[in-house]
Length: 113
Image (cartoon, rainbow, N blue to C red; front, side):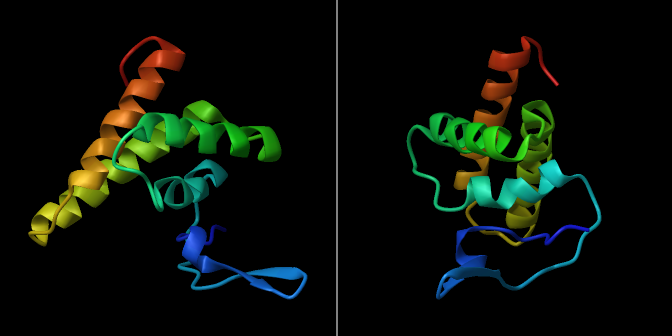
Protein backbone atom coordinates (compact mmCIF):
# COMPACT_ATOMS: atom_id res chain seq x y z
CA UNK A 1 0.00 0.00 0.00
CA UNK A 2 1.37 3.40 -1.01
CA UNK A 3 0.50 6.94 0.04
CA UNK A 4 0.27 7.92 -3.63
CA UNK A 5 1.13 11.62 -3.32
CA UNK A 6 4.17 11.78 -1.08
CA UNK A 7 5.92 15.12 -1.56
CA UNK A 8 7.29 18.06 0.43
CA UNK A 9 3.92 19.71 1.05
CA UNK A 10 2.29 16.52 2.39
CA UNK A 11 4.92 15.93 5.08
CA UNK A 12 4.35 18.07 8.18
CA UNK A 13 6.28 18.38 11.40
CA UNK A 14 4.20 18.16 14.57
CA UNK A 15 6.45 18.83 17.55
CA UNK A 16 9.08 16.10 17.52
CA UNK A 17 7.05 13.87 15.18
CA UNK A 18 6.36 13.94 11.46
CA UNK A 19 2.94 13.43 9.89
CA UNK A 20 2.07 12.53 6.33
CA UNK A 21 -1.25 13.94 5.11
CA UNK A 22 -3.55 13.64 2.08
CA UNK A 23 -3.04 9.96 1.15
CA UNK A 24 -4.40 8.74 -2.19
CA UNK A 25 -4.11 5.04 -1.37
CA UNK A 26 -2.40 3.21 -4.23
CA UNK A 27 -1.04 -0.29 -4.54
CA UNK A 28 2.33 -0.57 -6.22
CA UNK A 29 6.10 -0.72 -5.94
CA UNK A 30 7.77 1.29 -3.20
CA UNK A 31 9.98 2.94 -5.84
CA UNK A 32 6.90 4.57 -7.38
CA UNK A 33 6.07 6.20 -4.03
CA UNK A 34 9.26 8.26 -4.26
CA UNK A 35 8.50 9.88 -7.64
CA UNK A 36 6.21 12.76 -6.50
CA UNK A 37 8.82 13.75 -3.91
CA UNK A 38 11.51 13.82 -6.63
CA UNK A 39 9.43 16.15 -8.81
CA UNK A 40 8.35 18.65 -6.18
CA UNK A 41 10.06 22.06 -6.21
CA UNK A 42 12.40 21.25 -9.11
CA UNK A 43 14.61 24.04 -10.43
CA UNK A 44 14.32 25.09 -14.07
CA UNK A 45 17.99 24.29 -14.65
CA UNK A 46 20.11 21.32 -13.53
CA UNK A 47 16.98 19.18 -13.30
CA UNK A 48 18.83 15.89 -13.87
CA UNK A 49 21.40 16.73 -11.21
CA UNK A 50 18.68 17.58 -8.68
CA UNK A 51 16.70 14.42 -9.43
CA UNK A 52 19.86 12.30 -9.31
CA UNK A 53 20.86 13.74 -5.93
CA UNK A 54 17.39 13.06 -4.51
CA UNK A 55 17.33 9.52 -5.91
CA UNK A 56 20.76 8.77 -4.46
CA UNK A 57 19.54 9.86 -1.02
CA UNK A 58 16.52 7.55 -1.18
CA UNK A 59 18.59 4.64 -2.52
CA UNK A 60 21.09 5.04 0.32
CA UNK A 61 18.54 5.52 3.10
CA UNK A 62 15.78 3.13 1.99
CA UNK A 63 17.67 0.49 0.01
CA UNK A 64 15.43 0.88 -3.06
CA UNK A 65 16.26 0.28 -6.73
CA UNK A 66 17.65 3.28 -8.59
CA UNK A 67 16.72 1.65 -11.90
CA UNK A 68 13.08 1.17 -10.82
CA UNK A 69 12.86 4.77 -9.57
CA UNK A 70 14.17 6.09 -12.91
CA UNK A 71 11.74 3.95 -14.89
CA UNK A 72 8.75 4.87 -12.71
CA UNK A 73 9.77 8.53 -12.81
CA UNK A 74 9.87 8.49 -16.60
CA UNK A 75 6.48 6.77 -16.84
CA UNK A 76 4.86 9.08 -14.27
CA UNK A 77 6.13 12.21 -16.06
CA UNK A 78 4.87 11.02 -19.45
CA UNK A 79 1.41 10.39 -17.96
CA UNK A 80 1.39 13.74 -16.12
CA UNK A 81 2.43 15.52 -19.33
CA UNK A 82 -0.48 13.93 -21.19
CA UNK A 83 -2.90 15.07 -18.48
CA UNK A 84 -1.59 18.63 -18.60
CA UNK A 85 -1.71 18.80 -22.39
CA UNK A 86 -5.24 17.39 -22.32
CA UNK A 87 -6.21 20.14 -19.84
CA UNK A 88 -4.38 22.74 -21.96
CA UNK A 89 -1.93 23.54 -19.17
CA UNK A 90 1.80 24.17 -19.25
CA UNK A 91 3.72 20.89 -19.23
CA UNK A 92 7.23 22.37 -19.47
CA UNK A 93 8.37 21.19 -16.02
CA UNK A 94 7.30 17.61 -16.72
CA UNK A 95 8.94 17.70 -20.16
CA UNK A 96 12.21 18.73 -18.47
CA UNK A 97 11.76 15.90 -15.98
CA UNK A 98 11.14 13.37 -18.78
CA UNK A 99 14.41 14.41 -20.39
CA UNK A 100 16.18 14.17 -17.03
CA UNK A 101 14.90 10.67 -16.27
CA UNK A 102 15.84 9.51 -19.77
CA UNK A 103 19.31 11.05 -19.52
CA UNK A 104 19.94 9.49 -16.10
CA UNK A 105 18.72 6.07 -17.18
CA UNK A 106 20.95 6.10 -20.25
CA UNK A 107 23.90 7.39 -18.20
CA UNK A 108 23.63 4.69 -15.53
CA UNK A 109 22.35 1.77 -17.59
CA UNK A 110 23.84 2.54 -21.03
CA UNK A 111 20.79 2.00 -23.18
CA UNK A 112 17.35 3.38 -23.87
CA UNK A 113 14.23 2.12 -22.13
